Image (cartoon, rainbow, N blue to C red; front, side):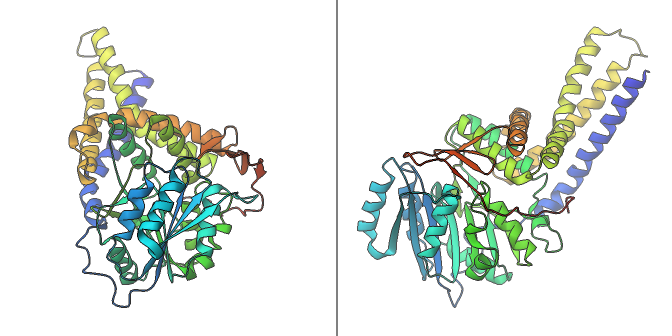
Length: 423
């Protein structure tokens, strides 16, 4: 057997071992997950501190009414809702005006007509909203979120206070309306979990930090301590950066999942998903080395088994059919690795509420996700731009914005420090 085949079998053994360990441990990992459900707690905390809910909306005519009405339907007894219309050019302002007339002083609408120089749009809108708020706790959420329970806010406050949490982020349940969403979204989520396992994020001894901007609940003391949105004013992934700042300052960060509390449809089209996930990967992994490392892990552990299985199958079909041929053993070895991988992925899909049959498409989703990681690498290097909410960015520079705003350079935002090596 040639050296090449020997290396190939060693590689199969190593990758197979990775998936075998994951198969053995996935049960305990899933059991340790903290998944909040509508019956997690009975009612709000007894003292029910004042909560300010802040929603930034830019061109959200398809989502804003559902977002606002389901938030106003919460059973929590002491909250205010502030919606910030961030230079919308569609029917969002009209819808918000109608909702404000309908709900009166239960809803406040703040209008941003121009983004300040040196800021990215959403960060500036949230900053403006916070200035109008009076809550002891602040909840930042997105306009494309829909509360599926009246108890979401009560449960979130109970979870935070029970665990002494300063900064709680609840990961959304993703809506999958199109086939491509069922193929792509779980694969992209698993790529993020390479680095951001909730149990590592929730460990105060580890510096790894993560938050999802769809639901970030924090004390005002925490918000002020990390410098608020001004500290991340030129960041496209302000949620993750705010989480990093919180951990750096010794504040208690906690990330949990949900089932039945709220949902979000991240991206309505495949091009939007390509841009959005590329942006998320760029901000999450944050440096060229980490993006490259994530891409290498995805390629080696996920794609190589399928590529190798295909090569072995072709070699077996075209090679000499004798007992000494390595193609047969190679085929069965790599098939075993692929089966191990599929057993792990199937369990993950079932755990997050996706039909097991969709796990068969995981390899397709991961292939696209790998392309997004390559795109993210170019973004981290400043070689390509990011288009987000009608604005185009390159690194820390706003190239163009809608409504004729002049280009502005996002200067003065201090870098968010990270550990030199993953914790």
